[in-house]
Image (cartoon, rainbow, N blue to C red; front, top):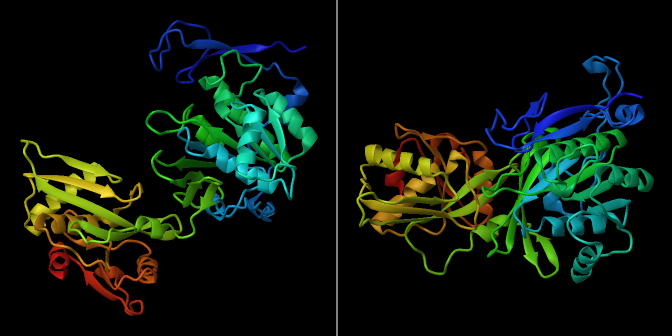
Length: 454
């Protein structure tokens, strides 16, 4: 019989040590190192789940010998979810869904599995809620409950044993933070337990071709809780976000081995559960009846589609020695940079003004195509001039005042034309030779030209 080996792992940072010690040398925390037993499982089990990719063969192959036949994806019955996942659920993949408490992660997955269970075997594993609580939610949402298999368990080994008997196509584990393995001595939710549980489930998924969807908690700053290796070993990582006072939720992919990243899906929370939003631009363009200065529409690129979003800016005289610069939904550092560009190349000084920026609808804009929109909206609010309601603007602004082109300019203009916009101010390199029907496109190459085009 082989002798069991032990290791010592810090529960805070995951650092390994050959022996126990009071303080972790990596994170400087005290009394966080616990003993972890290695090699407790049999040789058969070790061989069965060896390798993250599920391949146990030692045979070396060349690239042209590898079978390129794609596995058929599983439609999740939610078009927005399939879009974020890259076209559907890939058999044998490990997917991690994170989000704040109450965002609707469990509701989304319960709705998905209840529909999938009508055509294929599916297993829903709950570790935080009782089976009665999950059943009450399903009946309240009016979901079909006759075919979905349920399991209340927190042991990873027991879950995999049941899955081998049930042979489901998709498994939901809610949540990975409450799962544990018998060989790990630390408590559930610790770094070592989360890391080993996720690795075990990932190996199991790839060995047997079963898609495993794990629910993950988030920290106070909104990032996924647990060790960073949790995001490395899985195939797809998505975040389900939404404010508690808003009925809309956004699903965004941060890592996807089977599709594009930064893809965005929009859902609406209703009394009957989550509903898809087929036209997200209509939500973010819900403008008031009366036009106001500082309001302008931009076209941002989210994953594989354009999205029209309204940007609001308020410029007001400051009563403090250091004027405030507040940006909600955008990078505050980029706002400060664009204010300097406006002063140097636009001739407008706002050093004595408070500047407040808000992206309507709670969307987070990370790309640089919003630069020109932000500058023109600031000029509108500063001068008190109302911009036309049928005007759309996008473009990147350089430090020397030049207007740089952005990707997918033609697709952005087509999307704006579909929503009734008649005018567009875009980088000169993005101005098409033949603009969309009924739209006037103004191409600019410098900030001064954009200000004159207003």
